[in-house]
Length: 210
Image (tube, rainbow, N blue to C red; front, side):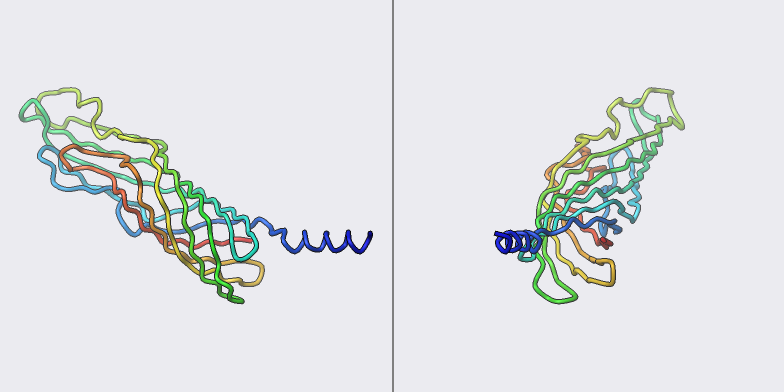
């Protein structure tokens, strides 16, 4: 009975894979907002080139794993132009943060130290702390439109795919990765095309896990 118990216990220990946790650092390679010359307001956007947040992974047998991230980014935009009545000019300055939550299935190829991997899954992206200041700088003092530059969707869902390397250094795993996300809806949308968020997202990431 005891040998059987030890055998079962050894099998459980062999297949029980630990959770790993750490931090993800990265940068987006494309702009969050698409801006072109608008018939009324000319927009300019700034995509802050950083992503940061915690990551957790459940490592399964046969090179498989399940990863969950929480990545934060921040964006700014500004615009200036004319609104009705004629001769009225305004400026607008806005900013928003966004939390992205990817849920990924991962496969690592069987190499000893540096293991290439691929992953795919879904992600949810939600805006946080949207702020905007609109000022009438000339012309007839009027109230700007209540819906000016307001988000069309505060939350959107997308499909994610990526590839990278898992480098097993002493006491730590380093995981450089390039990741692509296609979002199902735009956070911001201008009917005349002057101000809209990008549904394609490419980012480079470095995971540091223990």
